[in-house]
Length: 533
Image (tube, rainbow, N blue to C red):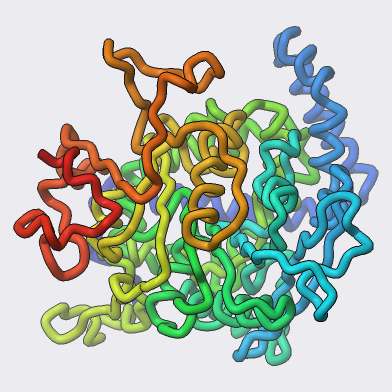
């Protein structure tokens, strides 16, 4: 008799939710099967009907706004390739393939030139222009396109890094749009999709970095990760000691290590009770693979609205910092393939409240893994990381528990908070260039010796205040009122409550193996002890 992985772990309401969820998954699969059998003219008919429905229900103001922003957003939304997205703004790209040690072929994208530099040789040969290398890595269910699908090049981090003189590389995880190939297994097989965060950490990240350094002939690079891209770096750096010598600074945007859970209580309880239920609902290959089909059928504003509703239900993200036309441009590039197993891995991490390796012992009723007395999933030893770490997180990001994260990281970790920022804001917010980029550029300048032209004073863990207690803006007339904080100092809020509610307090933080509050002489250089008194 097959084992039911969640038997005995759920309340009756959760069983009802499970039944409803599986019914929806089945219905979606049935509709998808029917849709795939429909002729193209009929599919175009449904698209036009969804467009007519939107126009009928939308207000005059909404339709007028969409008409004004249609050109830029649509050109980006309809572009289907990384290189073409960069061409919109006049940047030439290179495509590279790296083969991992376990046979996966990963696509890498490179932006080596400023506009007008295309005739130069960058990091190639004795006569080539030498540039510092920056590597960017995307998040869960994404690919490298999420970094460059912006409606304004000033808000595009890769483009701004290129203009500052960096040799910019962008990675892709196995299984996604640019890495759906292996020398050993076909994507049609279950074996191809048998990977989790462990494989990203043991193969994808170190092999990609090794390839980039070999091509550029540089001794090290700077790593910028977003969301799961930070988790992969945390894991990789913790288990590969020599990799730390090749990463001169690790900038973590919207860092992910041990999220508290989902905003939707029923879904959260269901997944925590048994992460294996994800396999039951989505199978053991790629997850949410039907997204691309629904995107092609639905009118873009309707697709955007569905994504917004889903993000609000699951994570309580409002998306208010991202403009509507940016969503219309970026959401078509939001999804890419990944394995169901990698999502299951995240739910194991959430359930056990530990940044652990994938637990393969979750099995039958007699499995050793069911008894914590005899078995404990292996945690990633993240305190062993030696590369400098700069965390830049959002004050309204439900996936970040900064207190929990800091307790698991080396004591020299630097923290920057962007108030009122949510997860996706670090990619596409309307003011991401003003609030986030300055911290990134400063980190590169400080740790990697890169050239930075940061002029706006840094704001650390929240808005600065003037002598009257009023919040200072970043407008030009206010800049001179703000004192530039030395980038070697970390300010921790003393009015924070404990980390159980997502905030952190200096009174419950221990960095490394020693509590430096007992002996201030042991405090790391980048901690401002004056703020802790």
